[in-house]
Image (tube, rainbow, N blue to C red; front, side):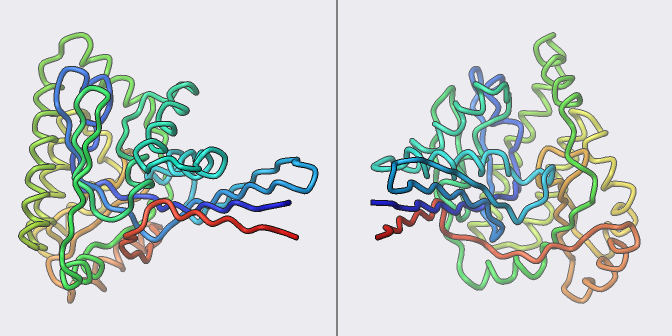
Length: 294
């Protein structure tokens, strides 16, 4: 009998800790990330016809190069569609990570776990082991975060690979500034957990900004596309900002000091060609359905 397996998974925004999930770092140190899944999706559909022929197709409502973990989400959706029977979200996430590693990706594991689980996560990385703790803030906090954290697509494709390679080369060569920056980035993840658990919106904004300053220690080029636009707003209209991926382009998150500042920040973003992204928290990860065809 013909059947269609459809899998939808969310992409994520990285609130704090990204970089410390990369195996190069966490094979010798513990990494931590706080991220959350949003209502932007990758969908994979596998159709098996009556003659057991297979076709697979993808769709995405997220721009390529956005820095929101789209490639990882694509592989989580794909592998859940073709091999997801009886597998846990952890197993699917690890399969997706290993699949990307075979293709030469040297990134970390946070993206796969975000797509597999959804919601707010505090992730801990130690060697190849990933521990996920789901954070469960109140609906009131979530609504406030959705109103006050603005997402903008800068229109600059996320092409920071050479910058990333430079950071890890410096790390391998014993540059002491890199481990110190990564230690601070991990600490920002712990600070972000405290802000979310205490439901402190200003604290989230301040932690975003402190994370950005920590990433500057790796290379100021990661924040350059955003700094020149947002620095004049800091301290008056916004608590801070952060690249929602590794940086040097893609999507940026901007935390308002007050909802009344929204129009001023939107105007500056529009003037610079940034596109506002409406978003909401997505509490579900892998969403898998099977339809049988007579």
